[in-house]
Length: 192
Image (cartoon, rainbow, N blue to C red; front, side, top):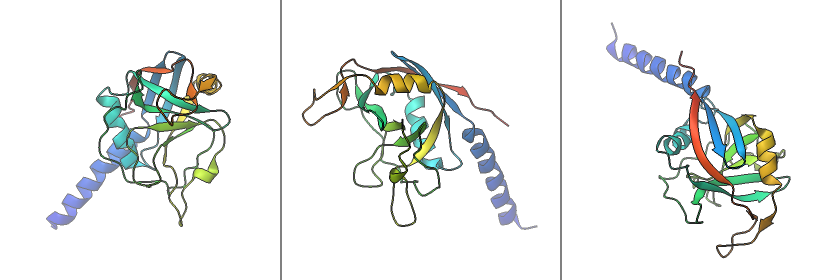
């Protein structure tokens, strides 16, 4: 009996079970503007989902803002406190944008700098089809890791709020009324 083969098969089985349960996880975002839910796509972006769940589980999304909204584009949040101070982040996650998931309306992707492997905790919700943000064989894009399954009307209400410049120099498209993430709950783990 090949012990190495058995061990490899067992590890693959355990990981596939974890992937199945993670692929069905649903998160509920409670904001001061209403609630919405998103389903995580761990089968397509496992490292990104694991990274995002660290922030959910450590509670550090609580009391952060949707600090950037652009009509017909997206709503961005998760990186600033209600006082517009940057929130601590874990190490950046590897870009997983070449999976075939598209930045279409209702999907959730990681925000990043020009460095494709710089995403940490900030994310955005596409309110329009933004396929030009997708990755391809020749370029990295913005990693889609979830999709809004209910409450897209809340996201639409947030993106249409009047915006301003500031309060931090260089910060634009900031909602005039603070949009606060009050809590994020794991509501469905669908354990097999």
